[in-house]
Image 1 (cartoon, rainbow, N blue to C red):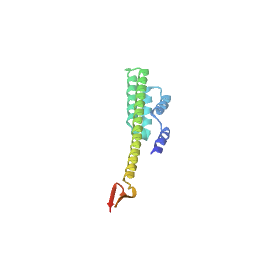
Image 2: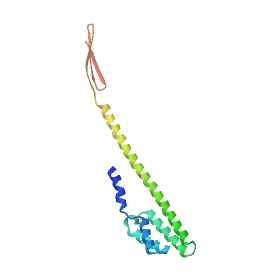
Image 3: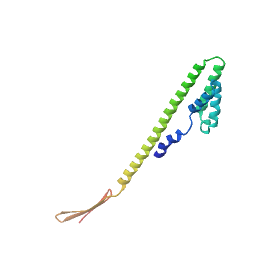
Amino acid sequence: MRKLLLIAPLILVGCAKVSDYQNKCEQIYPRLTDMANCLDRSIKNDSRMSSASQPKLYVLAAKYLGQGVDNGNISDAQARMELQNLYVNMQRQESMDEQSRSAAIQQGLLNAQAISTMQSIQQQANRPTYVPPVRLQNNNLTTTCDSYGNQTTCHSY
């Protein structure tokens, strides 16, 4: 399990991010609407992102802001700033979610270790201990005691 946690970031490094697609589309299309349509196509062609809600929301926001620019309701700079703010907030939320998942996994590992330790202690406690017989002599009385585990049996003669 720990190996998987160490390898997962390396696997994700090879995956494209929304910002990678956006940078590529911005180089090709200077208009925000055209860039948003390019970004939409790129996201839809990425099987990992096409089913995720965050990239879809981002593309919809980019299209909405692009239409606002085309209709003269918002300046291009203002729309790009809004889109960038949305991206930063989404990244921040994703980071917090990842930290929560990581903490939950670590807590699960600690819980499993605690359970294992408690089971080991329980097994040690249930293991019988042998105490050799004890002979006591008092005048004519001899007592012999045998202990096994938490039971002791004594005989006097």
